[in-house]
Image (cartoon, rainbow, N blue to C red; front, side, top):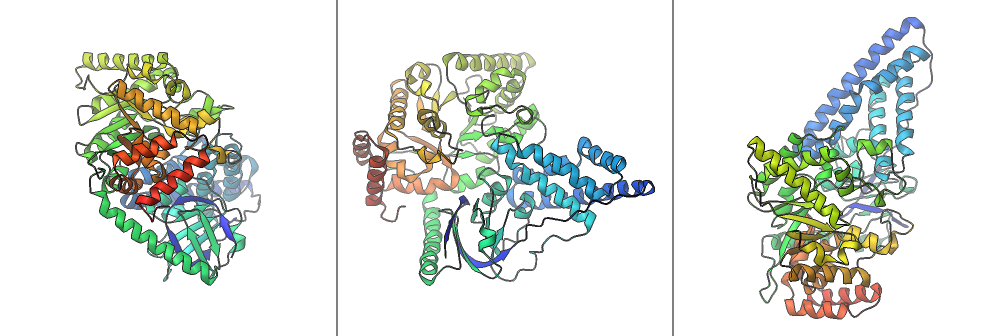
Length: 579
C-alpha cells in the first residue's frame, strides 16, 4: 500500500487489475558459424529487416490514422534507422568478419549504438536509447522467432506495469482494455510519453522499481494527474481514488461545457486564450478545448519526425496545414528554438557542456543562416494563407533582434525578386525569456509588434535553476517575487508602447496564477490546449477589479510561499473545488 511517486506524463485516475510485462531481455548467445553459412545468415538478416519494415509500416499507418501524422512519424524514424546503410553494413561486416549469427551481429551493433546514445550528456538524446532498444528487439524477435508478449486478447480493463515501454509497444496498446500504465523508467520528453498523451491513457513513469512491487492480478491505482501509483490499496485508498476518478471525469465534462463559452470576466473584461502546439494535428484538440488561436507553434518539433533536416517545403507544408486547420484564427510561428533540452543531429555528435547557456535558439539560427532562411522563406510564403505572425525565441540583445529582422528582410527581398507572394507587414514578435530583456523591456518593445513571455526559461535564468535537474528542480518556482516583478514590468512596458503581451509558459495554463496574471494586466494567455477550459473557468468566475486587488496584494509579498498560499486561497473562494 506504499504510495510510489513518479513522473506524470498523462492525466487521469484509474483503478484496475495489473498486467506486468517481463523486461523481455532476449537471450542471444554468441554462436560461430562456418564460412559456408555466412551467405545464409546475410539472407536471414535481409529477410528480418524486410519483415520489420513491413510490420513497422503497418504500425505507423495505424497510429497515423488514430493519433495523427506527427505521432505516426515517430515510426518513420525507426524505419529510417532500419534502412540506414551504415548500420546495416556494420551488421553485415560483423557477420562476415566474425563469422557469427545474424542475431548476435544485430545485438553487438545495436548495443554499440545504445551505448553511444546512453553516454550523451543531452537528456533528450539519452532518451532515444528506447528507440534503439525498440528497433533491436523488433529485429531479434523476427530472427529468433520469439513472439512479443501478447496483450491482444484482453477481456477486462487492466493497467500495464513494465520496466519500460517502447514507443511501438505504447502505440499498440489495446485502448479498449488498457486503461493506464506505469513504468520503472522514463521521462516527460520520451516518445513513449508523447504517444501516451496523444492516446489519452493516464500514465506515470520513472517510478524506479514498480515492476518489483506489483504482480499480475494485483489491484493498482494509477494517478496520472498527481504522478503516483498505489499497489494493492486499502479500502480507504480505493474509496478515495474512486471518488477522485469520478471527480476527474465530472470535472472534464464540466470543462467541456465551458470550452465554447467566451473568456470574459463577470464584469465584462474580455481575455484571449490561445494554445501552444507542437504539431499541426494538435490544433483540432486545442480548438475543441476553446482555444481562439495558436499563441506558440514550436516548430523545432519538425525535426523529431525525421532523421534529416526539414526542407523549405517540409516547413511550408506544416505551416499551410496548421493555417488550414485554424480556419482564420491567428497562428504565431516561433522560429527554431533548437538546442538545450532539444536535439538536432548535429548536436548529437558535439554536445555542449552547458547547452542551456550555449549555442541555442536564435543564436544557433544566426550561426546557420541558410537553415534560418529556409524556415523564414516558408513562413513568409505561408503568410498569405491566413493570420500568420512570426516570433523570435531567446532574444538577449538588441543586436540579435536586429540581425534576425535583417535576415527576414533579406528573405522578403529574395521572394519579391522571385515573384513569390508574401505578406510584407507580417506582425513580428519576440520571446521575453531572459532577464536581460525583462529588465529593459521598453527598449525592445519599440522594435517589435508583440511580446510573448516564456516563463519556463525566464524563471530558470532568473533563479539560476536548471529545471531538468531533479536535484534542484524544487527551486524552480513561478511564484518567486523577483520573477513576478519581471513579468509585471514586461506587461506594463507592452501597454506603454502599444504592443500586445502574452504569456506562453506553463504558468499561463496553471489556474493558480490566472487571477494574478489577469490582475497584472495580461489579456492574452497561451497554454496547452487541455488547460484552456480550467483557466477560462477562473476568468469567468471573477471580476477584473478582484483580480487587480489580488495582484496588488501579491506584489507586496516577499516570499514565494506567501504568494502561493494567498493565490490558492483566493482561487478557492471563487472556485471551491479548485486544486
